[in-house]
Image (cartoon, rainbow, N blue to C red; front, top):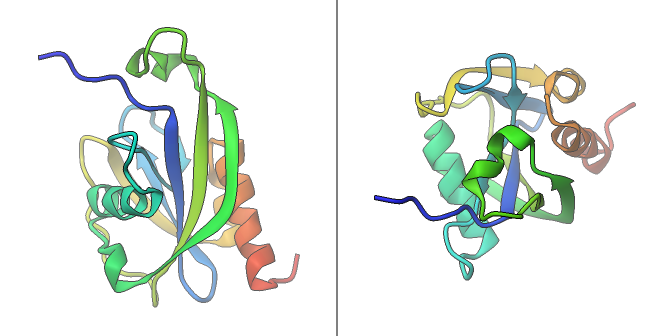
Length: 152
């Protein structure tokens, strides 16, 4: 069975506590690649908030319906890393990522999808931003501090 190509439109969900601790997860296919929850829409007409809730549940076991999901109303457009381009239609090299935040009351229980991620960590927002392999993910976490009015 041939798997359909990924749609180059995705979400990035920064999961955080009120005290700005951020959840990062380590990719199973690249040790040392720490990130927030990410994932592509499953179909062209899938609402982005639906994508965000689905990906959070799949990757962390956290039910986003039980917490505050916020569309941060900004996007990142970036070049898809060469090692992952095979997942997309031939010639697709760029992705548009829509950024969301999910505020949880504290360090909630995390259940990783073992085929996707191998470890998780809760870190203060600046440390989390520095640990991300993706510059756009790090920048999104820094925006969390700005949104919350945190000291630089």
